[in-house]
Length: 185
Image 1 (cartoon, rainbow, N blue to C red):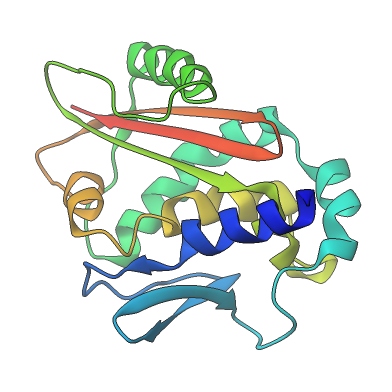
Image 2: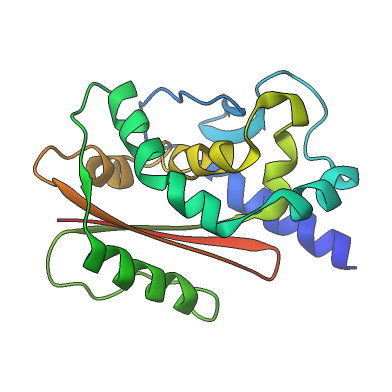
């Protein structure tokens, strides 16, 4: 039963109506646009999510390393779309980190008064697409975080907005799920 629920959650999470015309620049996955839905698939055409690889993923995931890569990965992401680099705002990161922990219990946008906010949650199983030979596991996880927003114009508008010069990042792993908050001002 648990496996069935996991499969349903993954399908609901990644079979989303595509609202975006943005190209996905990912080293790990691609969107297969079928019937106007964006389906996440491995970039190399291999087997879909590998349940036999979950122990490896859990042993490799290091939240502190991932957090240390977020600004670098975000600026690389923005650069892929021809947008200038930004800086990290310490206060925004503290607020985003606190809110990422709240997402575990209640998944909804915060009532922020200025700037923009992107939230998402990713099942850990999605990172089974990262192979040992792909490079630094935690760096690739940091890069994948931003890839998740490509199918949404509203999120991409925030992430690529030249008016936002400072960003904060929140990242919490709980219940086999990564909860992400990105805020810009």
